[in-house]
Length: 169
Image (cartoon, rainbow, N blue to C red; front, side, top):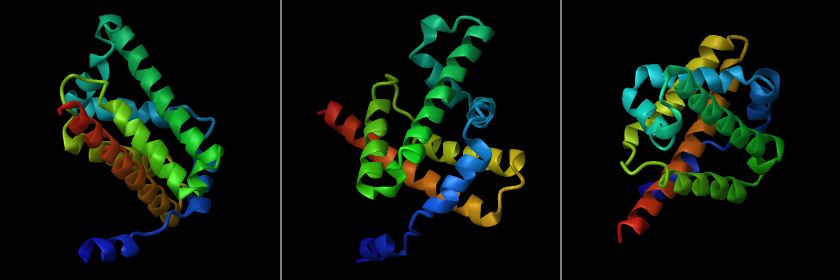
């Protein structure tokens, strides 16, 4: 019963405010995701190592590591672009599928399982960058962006954990 109530209490995505954050502040500005990656790597060495693990052969110097991390930031930006600009965000079923599928892909990125806390750390860092670097965003926009981040995070984590359990059978 609690799950059913939680489902109905979950706030709907505020597509218009999410799009406003994207269009007015983030889209066309690679700096948002670059800064997210820089901060998360500075805060959490485990996440940094996980992101570099798949590309270890290409990241032998600091400059090469920065290049690999920059490419990861670009891929994250492309994912958000697809969700928002291609209007995937307006189709909840397709949005869930896109996030779930990306989560499943993450299971192949590292031989070592990502800690569950890493997923939430990304959400918190994305919000931190939005609040600090884009102070012109309204509280309503920030709240909408946070709900969007949590939605993505939840569905990616579902895909990731399902893929891990399938691979461990």
